[in-house]
Image (cartoon, rainbow, N blue to C red; front, side, top):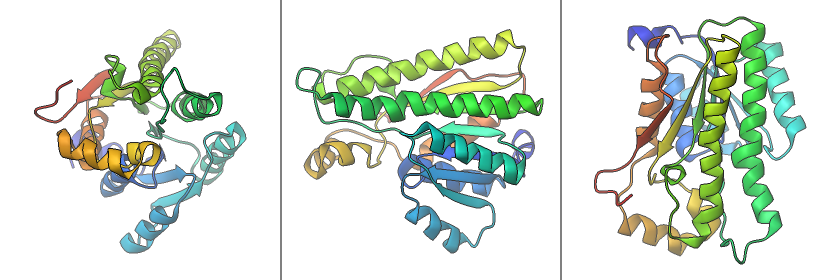
Length: 253
Protein backbone atom coordinates (compact mmCIF):
# COMPACT_ATOMS: atom_id res chain seq x y z
CA UNK A 1 0.00 0.00 0.00
CA UNK A 2 1.40 3.40 -0.94
CA UNK A 3 1.84 6.18 1.59
CA UNK A 4 -1.03 8.12 0.02
CA UNK A 5 -3.32 5.10 0.32
CA UNK A 6 -2.35 4.55 3.97
CA UNK A 7 -4.38 7.61 4.91
CA UNK A 8 -7.57 5.74 3.93
CA UNK A 9 -6.90 2.76 6.19
CA UNK A 10 -9.82 2.33 8.61
CA UNK A 11 -11.95 4.91 6.76
CA UNK A 12 -15.49 4.20 5.59
CA UNK A 13 -16.43 3.77 1.93
CA UNK A 14 -20.01 3.69 0.65
CA UNK A 15 -20.27 1.74 -2.64
CA UNK A 16 -23.47 1.54 -4.69
CA UNK A 17 -24.31 -1.32 -7.04
CA UNK A 18 -21.86 -3.54 -5.19
CA UNK A 19 -23.44 -6.97 -5.65
CA UNK A 20 -21.46 -7.87 -8.76
CA UNK A 21 -19.38 -6.60 -11.67
CA UNK A 22 -17.48 -3.35 -11.20
CA UNK A 23 -19.04 -2.66 -7.79
CA UNK A 24 -17.93 -6.03 -6.44
CA UNK A 25 -14.40 -5.53 -7.79
CA UNK A 26 -14.20 -2.09 -6.18
CA UNK A 27 -15.52 -3.50 -2.90
CA UNK A 28 -12.85 -6.22 -2.88
CA UNK A 29 -10.10 -3.72 -3.64
CA UNK A 30 -11.18 -1.34 -0.88
CA UNK A 31 -11.32 -4.24 1.58
CA UNK A 32 -7.76 -5.17 0.53
CA UNK A 33 -6.79 -1.59 1.33
CA UNK A 34 -8.27 -1.94 4.85
CA UNK A 35 -11.28 0.32 4.44
CA UNK A 36 -14.63 -0.54 5.95
CA UNK A 37 -17.03 -0.93 3.03
CA UNK A 38 -20.77 -0.30 3.25
CA UNK A 39 -21.84 -2.13 0.09
CA UNK A 40 -25.36 -1.39 -1.07
CA UNK A 41 -27.50 -3.01 -3.72
CA UNK A 42 -31.05 -4.14 -4.34
CA UNK A 43 -29.77 -7.72 -3.95
CA UNK A 44 -26.93 -8.61 -1.58
CA UNK A 45 -26.57 -12.40 -1.82
CA UNK A 46 -23.16 -12.25 -3.55
CA UNK A 47 -21.93 -9.70 -1.02
CA UNK A 48 -23.01 -11.94 1.84
CA UNK A 49 -21.15 -14.84 0.21
CA UNK A 50 -18.06 -12.65 -0.13
CA UNK A 51 -18.30 -11.66 3.53
CA UNK A 52 -18.41 -15.33 4.55
CA UNK A 53 -15.62 -16.26 2.14
CA UNK A 54 -13.27 -13.54 3.37
CA UNK A 55 -14.36 -13.90 7.00
CA UNK A 56 -14.13 -10.13 7.18
CA UNK A 57 -15.70 -7.77 9.69
CA UNK A 58 -15.11 -4.78 7.40
CA UNK A 59 -17.86 -5.54 4.85
CA UNK A 60 -21.39 -4.35 5.55
CA UNK A 61 -23.90 -5.34 2.84
CA UNK A 62 -27.14 -3.33 2.90
CA UNK A 63 -30.28 -3.94 0.86
CA UNK A 64 -31.20 -0.61 -0.73
CA UNK A 65 -33.45 0.15 -3.70
CA UNK A 66 -31.83 3.19 -5.25
CA UNK A 67 -35.12 4.19 -6.86
CA UNK A 68 -36.39 5.22 -3.41
CA UNK A 69 -34.83 8.28 -1.79
CA UNK A 70 -35.96 7.28 1.70
CA UNK A 71 -34.03 3.99 1.50
CA UNK A 72 -30.85 5.83 0.49
CA UNK A 73 -31.27 8.29 3.35
CA UNK A 74 -31.82 5.44 5.82
CA UNK A 75 -28.58 3.80 4.63
CA UNK A 76 -26.62 7.00 5.23
CA UNK A 77 -28.25 7.39 8.64
CA UNK A 78 -27.15 3.83 9.47
CA UNK A 79 -23.58 4.69 8.47
CA UNK A 80 -23.67 7.80 10.66
CA UNK A 81 -25.02 5.88 13.65
CA UNK A 82 -22.56 3.01 13.17
CA UNK A 83 -19.35 4.77 12.09
CA UNK A 84 -19.96 8.49 12.48
CA UNK A 85 -20.19 9.06 8.73
CA UNK A 86 -18.77 8.30 5.32
CA UNK A 87 -15.30 9.22 4.01
CA UNK A 88 -15.47 7.87 0.45
CA UNK A 89 -18.50 7.56 -1.83
CA UNK A 90 -18.32 5.43 -4.97
CA UNK A 91 -21.41 6.08 -7.10
CA UNK A 92 -21.07 2.93 -9.19
CA UNK A 93 -24.66 1.73 -9.68
CA UNK A 94 -26.01 2.00 -13.20
CA UNK A 95 -28.63 0.40 -15.42
CA UNK A 96 -29.15 0.30 -19.18
CA UNK A 97 -32.24 0.00 -21.34
CA UNK A 98 -33.40 -1.94 -24.38
CA UNK A 99 -35.41 0.72 -26.23
CA UNK A 100 -34.49 3.42 -28.72
CA UNK A 101 -35.57 7.03 -28.34
CA UNK A 102 -38.29 6.44 -30.93
CA UNK A 103 -39.86 3.36 -29.35
CA UNK A 104 -38.91 3.93 -25.70
CA UNK A 105 -41.27 3.93 -22.73
CA UNK A 106 -41.50 6.43 -19.91
CA UNK A 107 -41.27 3.63 -17.33
CA UNK A 108 -37.90 2.48 -18.70
CA UNK A 109 -36.57 6.02 -19.01
CA UNK A 110 -37.60 6.83 -15.45
CA UNK A 111 -35.85 3.74 -14.09
CA UNK A 112 -32.61 4.60 -15.90
CA UNK A 113 -32.81 8.21 -14.71
CA UNK A 114 -33.67 7.17 -11.15
CA UNK A 115 -30.56 4.99 -10.82
CA UNK A 116 -28.01 6.67 -13.09
CA UNK A 117 -28.78 10.31 -12.26
CA UNK A 118 -31.19 10.84 -9.35
CA UNK A 119 -29.78 8.22 -6.97
CA UNK A 120 -26.24 9.36 -7.77
CA UNK A 121 -27.26 12.92 -6.86
CA UNK A 122 -29.02 11.85 -3.65
CA UNK A 123 -26.00 9.82 -2.56
CA UNK A 124 -23.69 12.73 -3.35
CA UNK A 125 -25.87 15.16 -1.39
CA UNK A 126 -25.97 12.89 1.66
CA UNK A 127 -22.24 12.16 1.46
CA UNK A 128 -21.35 15.85 1.28
CA UNK A 129 -23.53 16.54 4.33
CA UNK A 130 -21.77 13.77 6.22
CA UNK A 131 -18.30 14.86 5.15
CA UNK A 132 -18.80 18.57 5.77
CA UNK A 133 -20.45 18.04 9.16
CA UNK A 134 -17.21 16.46 10.38
CA UNK A 135 -14.94 18.98 8.63
CA UNK A 136 -13.04 16.18 6.91
CA UNK A 137 -9.67 17.06 5.41
CA UNK A 138 -9.67 13.86 3.35
CA UNK A 139 -12.89 12.91 1.57
CA UNK A 140 -13.64 11.75 -1.96
CA UNK A 141 -16.70 11.25 -4.16
CA UNK A 142 -16.22 9.16 -7.30
CA UNK A 143 -18.85 8.81 -10.02
CA UNK A 144 -18.73 5.91 -12.48
CA UNK A 145 -19.73 7.33 -15.84
CA UNK A 146 -18.87 5.86 -19.26
CA UNK A 147 -16.88 6.65 -22.36
CA UNK A 148 -20.39 7.00 -23.89
CA UNK A 149 -20.48 10.29 -21.97
CA UNK A 150 -17.85 11.64 -24.35
CA UNK A 151 -19.70 11.02 -27.61
CA UNK A 152 -23.10 9.83 -28.85
CA UNK A 153 -23.04 6.15 -29.89
CA UNK A 154 -24.73 5.02 -33.12
CA UNK A 155 -26.60 2.14 -31.45
CA UNK A 156 -30.18 3.23 -30.64
CA UNK A 157 -30.70 1.36 -27.32
CA UNK A 158 -27.60 3.12 -25.95
CA UNK A 159 -28.91 6.62 -26.61
CA UNK A 160 -30.88 7.26 -23.43
CA UNK A 161 -28.24 5.50 -21.33
CA UNK A 162 -25.56 7.65 -22.96
CA UNK A 163 -27.55 10.79 -22.16
CA UNK A 164 -27.61 9.88 -18.46
CA UNK A 165 -23.84 9.40 -18.53
CA UNK A 166 -23.40 12.81 -20.14
CA UNK A 167 -25.45 14.07 -17.18
CA UNK A 168 -23.04 12.38 -14.76
CA UNK A 169 -20.13 14.32 -16.24
CA UNK A 170 -22.08 17.57 -15.91
CA UNK A 171 -23.03 16.71 -12.32
CA UNK A 172 -19.38 16.01 -11.50
CA UNK A 173 -18.34 19.46 -12.67
CA UNK A 174 -21.32 21.10 -10.99
CA UNK A 175 -20.50 19.43 -7.69
CA UNK A 176 -16.84 20.45 -8.02
CA UNK A 177 -17.90 24.08 -8.50
CA UNK A 178 -20.22 24.00 -5.49
CA UNK A 179 -17.55 22.43 -3.26
CA UNK A 180 -15.02 25.01 -4.45
CA UNK A 181 -17.44 27.80 -3.52
CA UNK A 182 -17.67 26.31 -0.02
CA UNK A 183 -13.86 26.04 0.13
CA UNK A 184 -14.40 22.36 0.86
CA UNK A 185 -11.47 19.93 0.46
CA UNK A 186 -13.81 17.17 -0.75
CA UNK A 187 -12.60 15.83 -4.08
CA UNK A 188 -14.94 14.73 -6.84
CA UNK A 189 -13.91 12.51 -9.75
CA UNK A 190 -15.67 11.04 -12.77
CA UNK A 191 -14.35 7.71 -14.08
CA UNK A 192 -15.43 6.96 -17.65
CA UNK A 193 -14.77 3.33 -18.61
CA UNK A 194 -14.97 1.88 -22.09
CA UNK A 195 -16.45 -1.59 -22.56
CA UNK A 196 -16.15 -3.53 -19.31
CA UNK A 197 -16.90 -7.26 -18.96
CA UNK A 198 -19.89 -6.95 -16.67
CA UNK A 199 -23.57 -7.84 -16.71
CA UNK A 200 -25.07 -4.38 -17.25
CA UNK A 201 -25.97 -4.89 -20.93
CA UNK A 202 -26.77 -8.58 -20.46
CA UNK A 203 -29.42 -7.55 -17.95
CA UNK A 204 -31.00 -5.04 -20.33
CA UNK A 205 -30.37 -6.46 -23.80
CA UNK A 206 -30.11 -10.21 -23.22
CA UNK A 207 -27.63 -13.09 -23.50
CA UNK A 208 -27.23 -13.07 -27.29
CA UNK A 209 -26.40 -9.36 -27.45
CA UNK A 210 -24.00 -9.76 -24.52
CA UNK A 211 -22.20 -12.68 -26.20
CA UNK A 212 -21.93 -10.81 -29.51
CA UNK A 213 -20.69 -7.64 -27.81
CA UNK A 214 -17.78 -9.27 -26.00
CA UNK A 215 -16.85 -11.56 -28.89
CA UNK A 216 -16.75 -8.63 -31.32
CA UNK A 217 -15.16 -5.82 -29.30
CA UNK A 218 -12.19 -5.66 -26.92
CA UNK A 219 -13.04 -5.13 -23.25
CA UNK A 220 -11.44 -4.51 -19.90
CA UNK A 221 -12.25 -6.16 -16.57
CA UNK A 222 -13.95 -4.86 -13.43
CA UNK A 223 -10.58 -5.31 -11.67
CA UNK A 224 -9.09 -2.75 -14.10
CA UNK A 225 -11.66 -0.21 -12.93
CA UNK A 226 -10.93 -1.06 -9.30
CA UNK A 227 -7.24 -0.34 -9.98
CA UNK A 228 -8.23 3.02 -11.46
CA UNK A 229 -10.24 3.82 -8.33
CA UNK A 230 -7.21 2.98 -6.20
CA UNK A 231 -5.06 5.30 -8.32
CA UNK A 232 -7.57 8.16 -7.97
CA UNK A 233 -7.82 7.71 -4.20
CA UNK A 234 -4.03 7.52 -3.96
CA UNK A 235 -3.40 10.95 -5.46
CA UNK A 236 -2.02 13.56 -3.02
CA UNK A 237 -4.60 15.68 -1.15
CA UNK A 238 -3.91 18.74 -3.35
CA UNK A 239 -4.45 16.79 -6.62
CA UNK A 240 -7.93 16.32 -8.07
CA UNK A 241 -8.45 13.96 -10.99
CA UNK A 242 -11.67 15.36 -12.41
CA UNK A 243 -12.31 12.97 -15.30
CA UNK A 244 -10.44 9.88 -16.40
CA UNK A 245 -11.21 7.65 -19.40
CA UNK A 246 -10.07 4.05 -19.32
CA UNK A 247 -10.65 1.76 -22.29
CA UNK A 248 -9.20 -1.40 -23.82
CA UNK A 249 -6.40 -1.35 -26.38
CA UNK A 250 -7.93 -1.51 -29.84
CA UNK A 251 -11.20 0.17 -28.84
CA UNK A 252 -12.93 1.85 -31.79
CA UNK A 253 -14.28 4.73 -29.67
